[in-house]
Length: 190
Image (cartoon, rainbow, N blue to C red; front, side, top):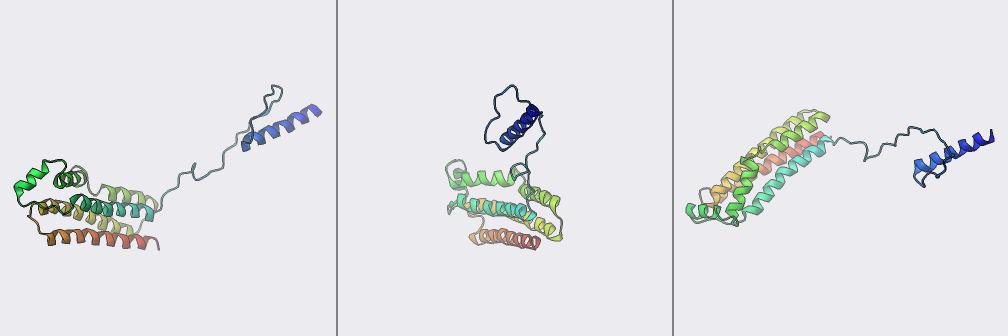
């Protein structure tokens, strides 16, 4: 009986030490314990948390705002005096025209400009549904479309086919679309 009690107490101590990770179990071949299936307590790292619709839509809206900022930075202020100079600049990989053309192609020609918004809409609609979510989708897709219009007009602005006034108006459309999308997000968070 004494031996069984010692083994039981030793088993409990070994279990507690192993479970709490303060030491390794003793290296005794005479101690036998029954293994217990212990499940760890869920933590933020073991249980995936679904993002809120607000954070999903905000990230997507920010994506389009950042594209506009990035595009404007790549564009700079360089305008060419003729279409021939602009075409020549397109063939120089270090020119603003060439860099902006690559940016335009990557974001509007070879990929779907609205893909980020559609993905965000799908993720958010898995968690929530509302009229504000549908409005956000409309306004963000308008922003993606207007962004590509701005980018195309920028290519024409570089060679003087589009005025600075028109280019500014295109940019304002994107900004207005994104402002509407942010209002939609605020409606969701209420």
